[in-house]
Length: 291
Image (cartoon, rainbow, N blue to C red):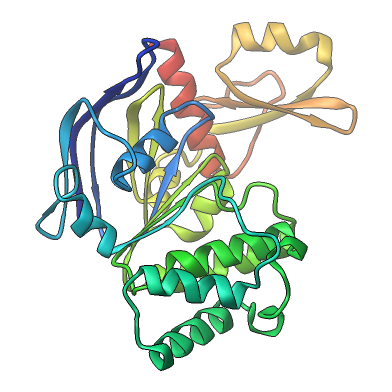
């Protein structure tokens, strides 16, 4: 289990990126949800030993993550939000190079590892193509292949499906789901569906603070019977926001579909809808903003 206690980070410009973050992250897929600027990437970089914290501790399997950085890197796989590639190098050659850096010096063993990873990420048939010709989804799958070198026990993926088309997104999420059966995988994202579909545990953070933790199914169940929808004209939106606890809005056939949170039927033409993780997410952020 990855244990984070009272982790704080303030940048030189005064931005409080992390405010006393405390989390327990067990084996399996763990979703970290939050809007842009919530502190997700700062937290991921700190766990990945790429950034220092001002206060707090992180431990994983007896390793002090903030002090024993070299030990952490031996068991860590990391796919950052943005990563560079050598466009004229093949994925096979690039993974072979990374494998050497990971300490796999035996050539035969290295060839077996690289072949296995290319097959796992569905890149084996394009192993001789140059990385510069890869689509966004193929680049992400190569990114996870390099993150899996050395059989890591802790894997961090930061916004991995942003910009992927639906087919590539599904393929990538299925791959992550398989990986998450035996190791700790932290999925940092602002895409609610990714967490709802994959993760056994989750946390919502905003402005550097943890707002909610739990099992996605349980937190959704806690909102059952409390979400109401109505389709209105654009000029009516301000009135409904004043009179009801509107947690989200969406254009719907030239009008606006609003979702409101209420313990009882709010009347006024609202209809009940099935709660989902998006409702949990928006209502949690709304409550935080109002506090």
